[in-house]
Length: 640
Image 1 (cartoon, rainbow, N blue to C red):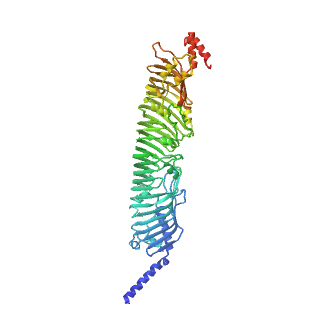
Image 2 (spheres, rainbow, N blue to C red):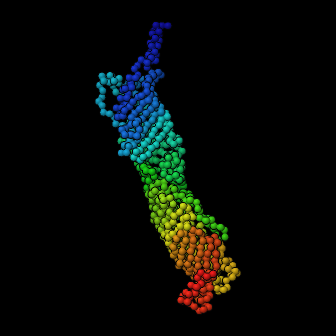
Image 3 (spheres, rainbow, N blue to C red):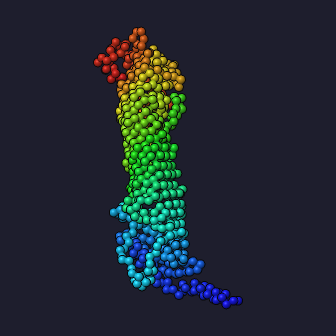
């Protein structure tokens, strides 16, 4: 072996021994104090290293630190802002010799970070470096620091493994904890793009996170920087492509896409972010987002709730226990029936089949408690309870489970309507009140919606003031109170031929009512029978589910009717007494007819007492409205 080769091998071996032995020869513990001081000065917080520090030079320079802690702001909920079980830092030795820090890897094992917003709104992630003069060369050497500054810092492979992040907002009294935080980070410098990709776990659900920030420094300073954020999970998906301004303002803006497959699952996952338990539906939102610190504005928004979609602008405030939503929306269709959990009585004809009573199942309006709302809506259609409403414009306000809807444009079954509807579910037992003024409305679908019965056709005007309350649809119908009026033109009563009935009854006297005649009368009922009218209607009152009218009238080319009686909406029965007159050449004869029974089996029969009164007065020659006629009425009243 040549002498130069032997010398080279000896030098190489000596260098290898030096590299292996250097960590044991260098006073590594001497770095602890300068590191603690440097971090403390840079953050304005106390930084301590309770664990060991070790240094490896092969195969790369690796510095490992155990159990390091950075203190929190004074008065914070937690004593520490951050703590890590251990950290491993790798740097390029060649770059260090050129006064550059090129980090090959930086791994944080099981770190804990506690983010807080104080009562005055200031976040604890804004650091205030401690003022200090630049150390002299001698001071730096004495402190174990290099005499010349490092020119740059870059991170190429930074990872967080098994981390925990908490967030406490003392202004909103809200707290959140994120565990199993595993993230990969990279940046060329504090003023260069920062990229983070990874995942975390919140309330047993994994959330994937992707973040791109043009300048990392802006996250803790009052600066604006481009930002892209993507969150993916089973309960919620969110993306933002825009900008962020850090510091106290904490403002975001940009294009936003939000998707919530199930409000119920989101509500359970967030620990009842919405205070009510019974919320459901899928939500989607796209638009231009601006805002921060729990107050956001969506412009050019496209919003979806299940099969309902709308567009407009919306303001959202999620600082309280209930989100506050305000704005203006144009909606294709609003269908509230799936969220009201009511069952209507099925429509039946007069066939004698049993009508199912109004549902006694508990009526739920829990969805009204999900948020406080102040919206102006225009909709092409609205479906609520049994009603199908056409193109409408309305103002909706919901406060703590109480809904008030002002109907400014309301197309209902071919007519127009105005009014106000109040639905209050805030006091345990839901209540409903409303005032409505309908003009030129098609009576057939309106009555079907109100009573689940095909009863009448025609066009008419309708005024109603109504209130009710109860735990079920049955309670609502049995508790109806109010007043109104209904006048219809050019229609038909379905299920009965009153014209023929009157003709049959008009031939009777008070002593001639028999089974055969009754069968003849009942033969004029059924789904194929009808009574045409030119005019029909009257005024009415409502009390405890019973509609009472004292001035009902009907007019067609053959008969004219006037009557008084009750329609028991709660019990689905009718009891009405009418006095028809037959338009005959001799002036007609007054007769009496009783309409009574359940809606599915309404009976029509002569009013025997009324016929007997008429018979006695006719035979005695007593006028109907004379004092003697009144005595006869009083005597026969209540008699069998």
